[in-house]
Amino acid sequence: MNSMLRSGFVLLSLAAAAVCAQGDTLPVRKTGAVYREEVDGLVRLLRETATRANLPALGGDSVLATAQILAAMGHCHRFYDLHAGPVVRPSLHFVLKHRKADGGFGDAATTVWVADALAAYDTEGYRTEIAAARRWLAQHGAGEAAAPAGLEPAVLAVLGQVRADVFPQDLARDAAQRFAAWKQAPEGLDRGAAAAALVQLVACQIANRRLDQQGQQEPAAAAFSPAQQKGFEFLIGKQKDGVFSVQVGKDKVIPHPGFTALALLALQTKPKALRSAAEQATIDQGLRWLCSLQAEDGTIGQEQPNYITCAAVAALARWHDPSAKPVLQKAQKAILGFQNLERSGYTPADPDYGSIGYGGGQRGDLSNLHFSLEALRATGLPADHEAFQKALVFLQRTQNLKSRNDFAGKVKDPDRGGQLLDVTSGDDGGASYYPGNSAAGYLVLPDGKSVPRSYGSMTYALLKSYTLSGLSRDDERVQAAVRWVSEHWDLASNPGADPALGEKVKFQGLFYYYMVLGQALDLAGLDTVQVPGPADEQGQRKTEAVAWRKALRAQLEGMQLADGSWLNGQNGRWYESQPVLCTCYALTALERCR
Image (tube, rainbow, N blue to C red; front, side, top):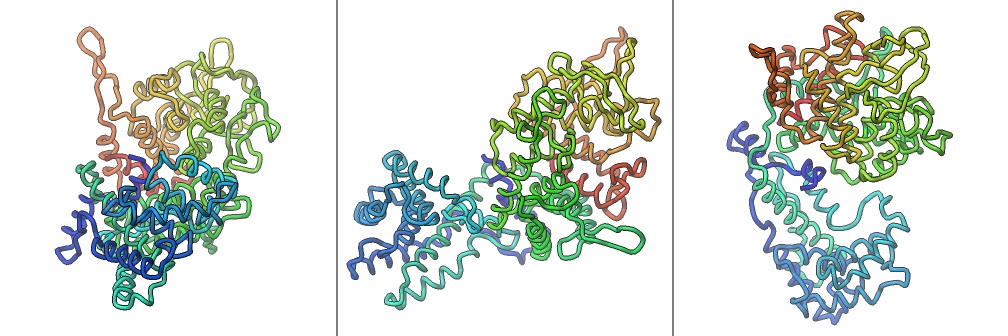
């Protein structure tokens, strides 16, 4: 099942857990077709009044209303099809009569609904008409509409409102009441309003149907653990109106879009079925605030525009509010614009080619790039898009894999006052920060050349990026990264640092490391990590399978502080002296420990 849709579903087991936790006062979701009587009655009323008034279609003389009614009927519990001849055929003929020479049916919204209606009855038979309508929509920018048209957005809007105490059976009450009024006084029927009401009723039926299916497909859904709930409560207590702030100087506190985006992402790891109405309202407020910050160029946040925009996309992509769609589309264009490619003067020979940095023409790095690739996929960009294929050029240059890494030369080390290093690739399969640079130090070869040391967080970032870019698990680049992970498996530290740099270095970015580890292994479809076991009497080592989800959960739960937060008390570099940030990373990692 599509992962983005799955994230919007409220799992039955979670809803049941919420009910049990709060007593028997909460309502229970009905299974099966909801609003059956209302849908049947409204269709019958539309048909009867159209016949009496000798109207050309169920929607009267409105193509939009007729298409909405047809689409809803085709997906309701009756699943109307062409065999329901006199019920649907005149309306289909009426709609098709209004097809324009360019393939459209009027404005964008009407064309979307007509395409939905035709597909509901005979996708193959109306293939030409549907394809022409889709081409017309692509040319006329229907995707930029603030309120997306069509039946699927209506269904997602219903799913987006479902909580532990609110279900599809509750979300078309207004439509049901309007039907009751029209039933008593048919002469007052407004066909446009009736079409909208039918769409809402049927959207609730479809949403409930999907929830039924989801309950059958994933009966063993992960629960939200007490540790996760404590972390959630810590974060929710640090916001105001859904916004998280940071202290600047001694007395100044300012709202921060980056911290807010990461925190809203972390808060949304709590399944929607388990959130209270107040918690959901807080999350909604914060997400709307992020949307309000978007600049004309699509970025969100003035400082580090790419990094913050990607964090905002991660949070907004989980939100099923229609207002998020145009924001995500503009953000996608902004992120693509940050990639270092030919249009900005780069050639494939340049070490930075294909990379993305913090924004504004800065050099790229693997940390920004894995966030960027994740954001691009979340906004709907397919893995075969050229942005991912060109990113592979840069990704290979961060990997210590001689068969693929073509980077060698002299680079300045910013951590050593710009000291010039003659670097080359190693061959252990792990990754560094960017070509020729590693925050974990360098391995100096006998000939004086330096190999940027592979380290944990960047190797997982590489594995994650390769997966997002469509590489399979049998690709030699992926296999090399997995081999490094197996040989350096460690949850006590961020492995790979040069021991000469001191004990503290191996704890830098520790909670970031936990987050990327969970994301990378989960995305790559790995349930276990093969690690070297103890040596036998002959000194031989056999591998052991580590269930990483269980191990990571135990590690994080053991590090949680009494107030529900997490904190890197051993190395505060990269803002890990901030409990809000560490807690965001920890909750995002724990979500992967299903």
